[in-house]
Length: 392
Image (cartoon, rainbow, N blue to C red; front, top):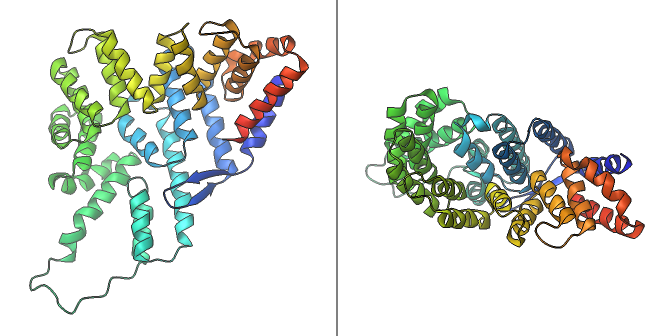
């Protein structure tokens, strides 16, 4: 128990300071209180998981999402899972995290001169996830000088900029799940060919049970190469009993570079949905998704290849990315020697890290290992644990 308490204290000390949030052009900070609150909420959700592998994978995915420092991955997560009830517990937490990161961006740019070059930097880095921040900063930027040589028939300002403004509102309202207002905001850009707005309308229609409208907009977005639209279209076609066509769109989404699509494609090959079951292809897609940093794929490979060096490798990758589930499984692997040589010191490190990250199943193992390791080994292991906590 003393070991467990000291590890929790180390975690509390680590979370007490500020955590850096890096963007394309600056170094920003969020308060330690925000970070601590998010960690507590994640721990509460972890405590409710009762051995469901899919739930564990979802939890690990969010932990890895919070561990990385950028904002757009949060937005992509929200967009990808907005209509999936399995993610309902995590979406509010991810939205809160994005709001806090956008607030950090807003605080940073509030001190910047309202120049067009600063606006261009802000748009380049944060238009997708923080459109309101960009819009507010843009309102402070002086208008460009009017040229003496005006076009003979200049287009009205509203016609030139209206769709951009509607698109920004569409993205923001959809991201915060205000579907009632997002739907009318998305119509103009969607009708003008904005693939992202079309995907949002498809997702909104899907959530309300209007599958005809959802299918129409998903097809439009997918035809333009919008990966999330392609994934949604695949889901809708699968529900209609058209697995072969669904598989084709899922492949396109995967080829567009969407790791989540590769993961879903792996499941299709594993289960034989729209094709012959093909474990080799399933494994290939999982590997590619894992290589792109998709945590559920890493965990799936670690579980699928349990007892092998490859299984240990992928557990290691997921554990390094901050997944408590992977840390727990990796600790057991080192303790039992299932995927390679037994290493009780490494087992102690990873089981302890899983414990401070909310994975309670490692507690008894940590206490038992603390009696099996020598004093030098314990000191070295605890130093490694502290270094990993401090490096977050």
